[in-house]
Length: 423
Image 1 (cartoon, helix red, strand yellow):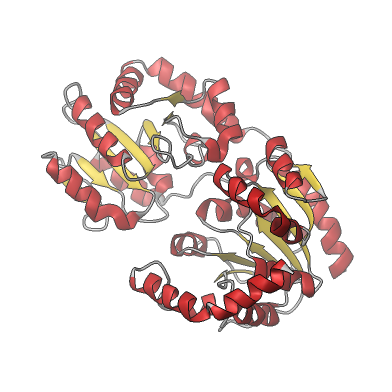
Image 2 (cartoon, helix red, strand yellow):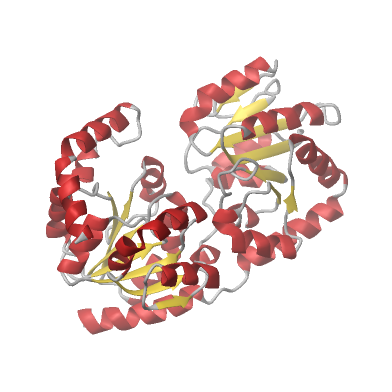
């Protein structure tokens, strides 16, 4: 009943939703040459054979799917893979990982006609939904077509869970679409079970199986040469309020390291201009990556306002502050910087990846900070005591590279389903 009401409402709201998508397009939040994909209009033919559709909302989830796709491609070389995401940044980053049997499309907006066009065209044989991103019309379309679907690496943020628990009567039929739900942790499994999911098991986090972020070796060499004689500090995936802390930390550190260079990589690169204004207000020299690819000797702060280059920036900075953690965002994936030879500084907000951050803290594999002053103090400590830096960075790398059975278990289970339906 609730699905029917939702479907009627989305039909009635189609003009408003279409207008909203137009505003997103003008703001650069939708791809101008691929906006039709969001309405289920496809210009790419469906390949012959068994098609596995994976959906990941954004960059982190999409990256966590790559090891799974690679393994399944090895075991089933004739299968094809359709990966959908909802953001331009994820599409740009995924582009470099696609091939003739694995391709990317934007997820259609949750309008009945857009969903119908999408499903009629692609006709997937198996659906793998990553983390959550539950869209009622899409899930209802999957169920009506009898397509077997799995929710993998399943998690609900604190905010999402608080909302869904008030709509438990609506969540249960959505979750029933999934033949099995593989949760990241015991706590996450209990959340899905509370909302009415029947077949739930704890698998672990697939992000432990994700490969280190890619990096162009020539670009890395040039960047290293440009900062060869300087101390480097990186504030990564920052949000509003955290750039101010990075600037303040830079001003403190400049008293001890006159040649220090701070890199700021905002989570949303479109904020680069406003960040540049903050830096100018503090009397510092600023350079943006999009304007000049390398910092000059005069550059105090370098804004990394490009996409798909975090692997480079993590490799040039011995100490990294991971954003989304000083402000109430919930933190970001600590596994990504942990692959590299850097020490991670993390604020008190880490609920989006609570189990992972707890694991790092208990292993003394990162340092908790609460202010710009603490960021500066910890940076100074680590630079002046390389043995402490090495101990903490190696502990983080050990966690990131530790063998996790999540991928192996999932591949084993999915392989049975693929063989059952495709062979």
